[in-house]
Image (cartoon, rainbow, N blue to C red; front, side):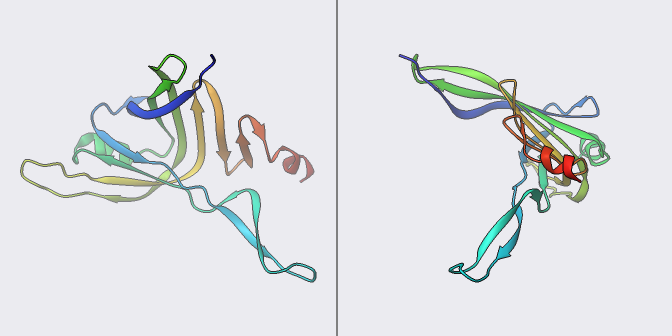
Length: 172
């Protein structure tokens, strides 16, 4: 009986920027929310308004990376304007064998710092500072397969390797 894999949790991950590994420093990352830019269609013969998504065009994309506390690594990350990569190991349940396996997930981003929060100072506690980056490039690879890629400056929008803007680029 052929089963399938259910991604159950992210077993662990690390953050990298400019070849630097932030072991034990970054604690959590919120990935961007993709919201298409839209235009309202209305007119004769249409029973109401329709919000039409502009293929490959999205609003602001933000990522937020949280850290344990402020320190040199936090400020080093704050200076990153190039590629920031999050590499993780997704724990997956094989439904046929009822066993856990692991699948790599890589999220590659490009962007610039938009804001930063120094967090708090608390005796015996974590400060939880955060850095928000405005992203112009996002690529997600799961198990070695590219599942999503958006490059705003080069008009590239790929889902499962299909370049959904290739025809548009060839026509302009």
